Length: 69
Image (cartoon, rainbow, N blue to C red; front, side, top):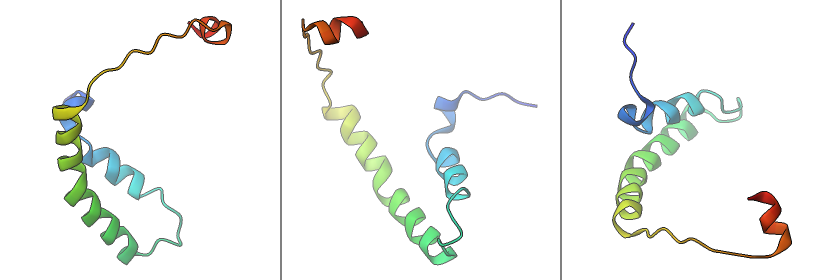
């Protein structure tokens, strides 16, 4: 048995696993369309997020937010 970290596997194994959990109302054609869309859009979207995203830290001093800290 070989252990691999989830980060090294990428998003495809998780997507394929999720695809098998869809209800029976999703026929193979629907699953094929979903797969095609994920293959087309996920990698470019992830690249965009990695390139352009900025971490924003919002500080709120309301009592409600301090109770969750």
